[in-house]
Length: 485
Image (cartoon, rainbow, N blue to C red; front, side):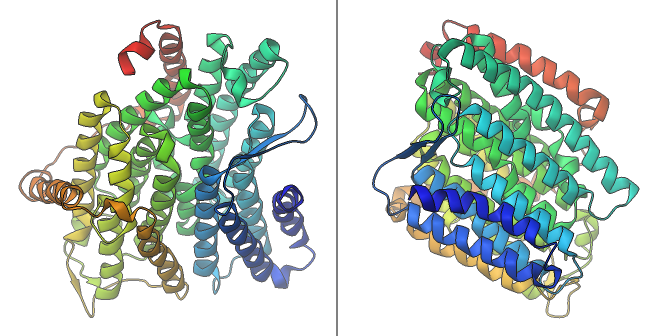
């Protein structure tokens, strides 16, 4: 397994650069890498216990592989395959496929890292590959959005790197486990970097503009898997170091509410999906022990929603009410919206039930409000008009991608089949019904327009400073564990 893991990590980088030598084979080489990752993820689920490799003593690389890693890697493989299918008959160049595969490989690396320096390297590669994909159209707008993302990401990682050095000073090791007993400032700095990188809470206010302004397949990659490169280490640290578990859960509940609070009032389809990405990342962090399953479900459904949003006749919900969507596209849109709302027969139902069962008592009210907000948000899609002759700019590669993603949602439904009890089924249905009522009678006619001031470039770094102070307060507060536990 150790040799296979090393090959699996190195292969995307090797193939990515080889594409330049064989540009006519770019799509096929990229497809082969994604399929190999899919096979590797499925193999992980046959492992009965945690596998840990330490390659170069305390100064080197520590890798941890278990079911949590498997869920995240499986998500990355399926989303990358869907994006490749979507782009298959497009005019994307070898450069595009190179960056997709390098991004795929570096995201995979973050899902097995268990030391802060290896994770830092992987996250920085992700930043570069993401920037190049965001800026791929080479328009002034795309380059600006890409540079904005790159600047915020690099500033966040500077904080992270200082925290990693402080951990090493305390334990002579960069291992995640070194957070236990490290100075409070180390935890605060590392967490600030990961929160910003993952698009979590107010540190993630760079996310809506970045994801909504990128090309459709890039948006699907960013929201489906890239942000999880920041979420996974937080989840792993929470499971390894009990002292940080309450902090991770606090940010889970906070970001779930923040994201959905913006999403219910958003009038732009892609911005609504981007804000909802912020919210759904909160569900992953709110219950770290089952976050892998929720990450899989969210990655599949959010990628599908972004791909579908890219073929709708307009991005404006108000205009879409007067532009009937082609019925097959609407059906796919409704299936994805049902899953993320927690409707039975799709894996979003099982993921939400499992997450709710693993919440601490103080989280329950906040996460139920977030679930209600999710139902309200996606009622906007569900109640759009449709017809057999409706408008949709369907691309040739859309349907293979959507079949893969929605098929994954149906099959993943069996992961937690124990969710199907009368009690578990009634509650989500009531939540969805109440959300639809709230949308129909209140939010559909609401004219509220939330300010975007905090998303401005000149405010993003200031928000990071405020977050750092808040993190210092959390890690220094002697009563935090008692209050949350």
